[in-house]
Length: 370
Ligand code: NAD
Ligand code: IPM
Ligand code: MN
Image (cartoon, rainbow, N blue to C red; front, side, top):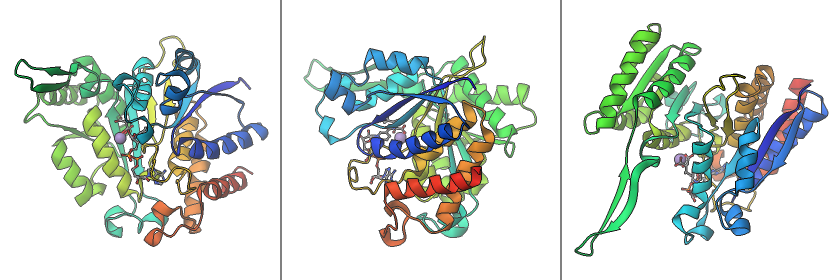
């Protein structure tokens, strides 16, 4: 079996704690001969800043570029609040996304049956929920220029961020959303703010054209992003695939996370364009949540978003659909047995810590894999 390379960037806060639970799963898969992953590890975020004075070193960037897939924990924390803006922990993640060309961010919000009561919404609103947010990840206001704070003649300051999208950027993310919708329930809801933003007007036009010309079999509707946020809380099951830009996707996916019970449940895959010669995509897999400095070191972190992100790597980077399905099933079974980290527990009373949750998922996975 050809070796597949994984580059692990655990990061800061709870990042290393949740990554450790994925590493035990990888070790099991390799031991069983079901995979042949080679592992390398690097530093990103505050931990890279402490070691190298940058949010990610050139050597680690080169390793990320060369790997078959990157697994990323989380970055950030109050310790680095005062570091120069370009060196802040989050800059490491943004550089990875940009330099690896990871324009397509898939954030599936699935409510496991056992967690229907963990959401802050009523059971019947979230039970059976299975939606996919497709977030554009390398454009928009995150990367548009100018991006600056300037001092005006009168001494006042003026801050500028620039929202920019080109036809090409919108077309390629739209195709990702339409393709994924075809394999699901055949519906795309495109969210923008064409009522106030030129980029929203173009987004709407380009998505409409791609839908009409290339995906007549997919039902497309357009929704203003603020209404989309409201509808996600009111009646989320009306959605199948939500297609949206970088900033709206960031906000809407945190809402999506809470529908599932906790931010600690939501995985993500960030994919590049297929290579012309090999068809392989650059890819990074990470939970949607951050470094959770408030619980780091306490054993309270839920490792499920990280483990499910690895499941997405099995599916999207390595075509191991059966193993990915079994890993999801292992998570569902452990939740079905009532194991709960603090974030998904009734009244916040945990029955397991991070390591016990990871170990229980691995045990179920081992049983399923046989
Ligand atoms: P956060 O996602 O770190 O935490 C928000 C809340 O959710 C906290 O109460 C936290 O305890 C809880 N939470 C998050 N993940 C959890 C898990 N796996 N299990 C249990 N509870 C969990 O967001 P924040 O507090 O706004 O940001 C903290 C830092 O993380 C900031 O520096 C921010 O920039 C960074 N951040 C990083 C990423 C990333 O690395 N991808 C994403 C979001 C935020
Ligand atoms: C996310 C995070 C990142 C973002 C930050 C940490 C740069 O919030 O992945 O959702 O804003 O994209
Ligand atoms: Mn976010």
